Length: 194
Image (cartoon, rainbow, N blue to C red; front, side):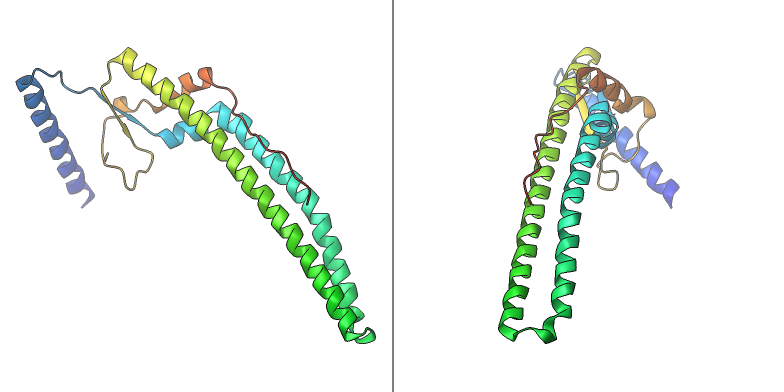
């Protein structure tokens, strides 16, 4: 079954190349020079991503946890203490203090979520910065090598690219050049009060 899919894929590729070459000759176009890139591989293996963006994101996440954990622990202890005194307290006083604890917990949770959203935004902006640098690197690379068509193979399950010779894959070359072009990415985040 897999062999037949591969053969069918090769047949379509060869047929397409033959049609493309015929059309190119007919209209005086040069045949397309094709390259394949796995943008996700390049991004996630770049120095800017692995050595700058990821460690800063992990540190920010750890700092947020370190700030939130004691507050949540304190609230949990206060809640347990309040519950142990429920039978000794006036029902209205108990309800009032329980509501105050719930409101405090909800406020902390909102602030934690707000900080997480700000971190995610900063991380996305950092990834975007690396992606933009990658686009420039790819543009320069294809000009130097006379490549006219670059296909993305990042999502292998849904990619239009099924089978190709490894010589067409420029991902490692792009990664090397990207690492020379950009070594860090901006992570614009400040932890806010909880």
